[in-house]
Image (cartoon, rainbow, N blue to C red; front, side, top):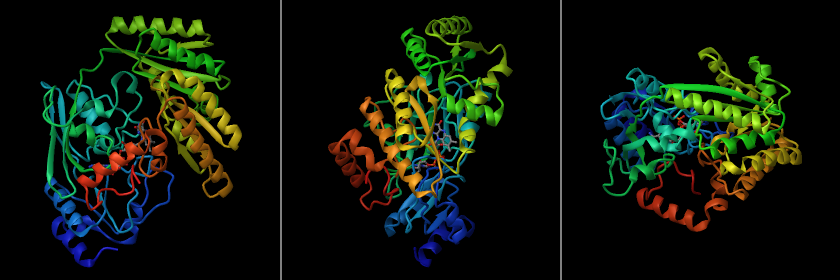
Length: 459
Ligand SMILES: Cc1cc2nc3c(=O)[nH]c(=O)nc-3n(C[C@H](O)[C@H](O)[C@H](O)COP(=O)(O)OP(=O)(O)OC[C@H]3O[C@@H](n4cnc5c(N)ncnc54)[C@H](O)[C@@H]3O)c2cc1C
């Protein structure tokens, strides 16, 4: 609990309407999109500008109150599950696009701007902001930066970190720290913006963020390759890259996911196929034609049963609709869905996919696998019911083994969803104790009272 006096001080800074300490309000912010136990925070506050945000953080620091900052709460690793004696800081009131500079190709935004809204505004100016997490209709730019979010275009265009030119953030004492610049090049001092990216609210609270924009592709072509064997599909992924073609999107779907999507959306998918690849190339029109033809040739040679190349925008939209609904379709099957994102080097995708089948059989769990095959970033998705203790125990064993399979293949615990609470206990397996000790030292130095999202990433 926090004192009435402190609640009063928050109200003085923010106004009464932006300070919530009723149980019903606290309940709303006790959980996020990860499958983890909720924790009721002591209060929820909503600053509407930078000055208020800085004052709130300074007040929390002076009183030793933990701060969990929250955008849309769509993260999948427990990054916004608060402390029970802590405060949740909402960024929804700080959602202004401050500048879209077409000449120097950058955008400057407040922390709480919604990703898809920025992308749409940027497109209106004839420019392109590529990072496109599946949650972009709700996720915020600060949440994207704090998780280093990826998406479907990661293979060609990279992920959020590749677009962060600079940001300013409040340190634990509530002072505004500036990093980076609006220039293409900037090596003034440590790369603090790089350090803050993927820091999950544990090192500072972002205020404004400057993002790189790029010219949009002139043309694009989407296709769906249908396979009677998973091996042929994954071999095609490797062969496309080996042919020095970098599609903007290269997605995989296993048979379980194909059938589930078809049941859900009637998207015209071949339910007897063992695997699908959904592929898009973009760029100059001539290059797009050439690369699409080459991909068809590669896929046929490796043994695709059929390749459907979208003839127009409607057919293209249909292909991507099938991928977009995959998670919703799987989510309808069982009460609990655990979406993993352990990632492997691209060449290890076949071993990762067969590893998932082995794990599903060994632990008696249902796993649908789909995701960003081109990045080695698949999403094995376990369907279960968390209220069933035995089933949940098996899921925990399966998840742990997914991590071990990925690490054994030279991969990583998380390609894009972050560590949060969910994977903090597994960090040492990947990076080793000295790396964790180094991170802990850094955290102590910048946040001596441990108020910034404690319990996330390093424990
Ligand atoms: C259906 C669905 C699809 C998804 N698809 C993808 C995908 O394709 N790719 C992908 O990478 N992720 C995906 N995600 C995960 C999630 O949407 C991303 O992690 C996203 O970046 C979170 O944004 P948010 O605004 O919801 O952040 P939140 O969940 O609110 O917060 C995430 C983290 O950022 C921190 N944070 C928030 N605001 C600030 C701030 N101002 N300063 C410092 N730290 C801050 C929080 O403390 C927390 O640690 C998906 C999630 C769902 C539910």
